[in-house]
Structures are given as C-alpha cells and as structure tokens.
Length: 301
Image 1 (tube, rainbow, N blue to C red):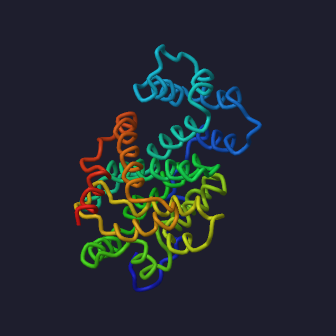
Image 2 (image 1 turned 135 degrees about the vertical axis):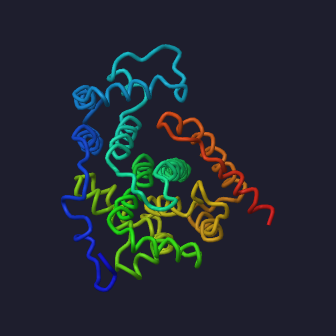
Image 3 (image 1 turned 30 degrees about the vertical axis):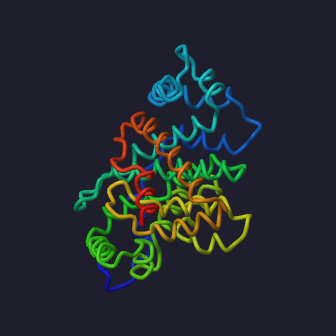
C-alpha cells in the first residue's frame, strides 16, 4: 500500500488481518456488563479454559494480593479478588497473546504493554479519586487504547516509518499525524478491533475517544470517564527521555480533577507502586523511569 491514494481503515483491517480473541475472555466481558451475574457464573468460562484457569490462580496467589493461604479454586479467587479484577486480567492475557510483534525499527511490544499497564492503572485510580462508578471500565479502556498500533505497523510499515520520523522531528502526537495522512487514527483502529471482537460498547467508546482529550474536558461532567482515559494517553511512554505532552497533561488534570500538583504527585506515587507490583505478574519489566521522577522534573522547572 502507498499514500498516493487514501487508505481506508476497512481495507487495512480486513478479516484476514484481525486476530481472534479467545471465547473465554469475550464471555467474561459480556458477563461483567450484567450485575446479576456473580462469581459462580464467571467460574464456568474460566474453568473451561485450562490455560486461563492456571493463569488466574497464579495471579491471585501472587504477592500483589498477599493472601496468607493459597487460593485453590477459581470461584474462591473471584469472591476474594472480585470479578472485575479477574476479568481485566483475563482480557489483558487474551489481547497480549493475539497481538503480533511487528518487525518495525526500534518498536518494542513489551514497551507498548508497559505503557498500557501504567496508563490503565492511572485511569482507574483517577476515576476512583473522582468517585466515578465505572473505574474498572476505565482500566480496560486505557489498557486497550493503543492495541491496534502493532497491527498498523505490521500492515503499513512504509507509511508508519514516515509518521514515526515526523513525530520525532515535529514533537507532535501520533494521532494528529495519522489523521492528516489517513483521515483516521489508531484510536479509530483500536475501536474497530474492539467492536469486531464484540467487546462491550462502553469499552469501544472509551477507546475511540481517547485521542480527543480537549473535547472531552470541555464536554462536562458526564464525560469525565472518557476524559480519564484520554488524559492517561498523555502520560510519557516508558522509553521517552522527555515528556513532550507534560504541559497539556498538567492543564488537563487540573481541569478534570480540580486537584493540586501535590495531589497529582501522590497519585503518581500510587501508580508507580502498583505498576512495580503488577508488571512482573504480566511478565513485563518495571519501567526504568517512574511517573514520580517525571513529576520531580516538572516541579524543578
């Protein structure tokens, strides 16, 4: 494909390209959207997938939760940890297992998942601090917001080589450059992928809107959940030396949360601690630079 003619997203993400999400993960997500279902209902799709069952039990018996005795059954795990936490973990494992690792310059898939984890933890914690009822949905939305990027790099390597170069030279957001070149961005691509997987509509919307932070901040309180996910997208990537979107993030945080820089620093510390505990469970390295370190540089300016 070349850029001599417009590239339709539907042509890039045709059925042969899109990976299939395991049925167990989709089943859990669908159950999670109905409050009438409890641990016994969630147990069935997990136990039907031996690989997932083993991962769930390993997850709940990790030091992250610190239970004094070993958890032996899936239903007990769901009761103690909560169905939403287990569903998010299953979703992460499912997506992580099916997204390809493209051979694209310096791109590193584990770095992308590092960023996704940290952004998901931030979105959830910010949502909780704002007392939003859908904080767990915010975790999932932020976790999946960039999941289409590896597929786009794989399918459009020439176009993305140019975009990545321009991003480095011009210091602009990837989404803006994508809109200029294609008329769509990786948020649209990830939302299409989520919709094709029949993920809940709430997740699709959170993913689709995450590059529209200014519009969401101006849209009022009913859009605060989407704004949390969009704000998370402005966090520095784990491999970034400089935080190019720092000013936009700080201004957005003050607008959305109406909290001080000190409170933001406390939130960052909590996210850093959770990231350090959570990353090994997902076989990811802990980010070399913490959000607290980026914040210290901001305060020192």
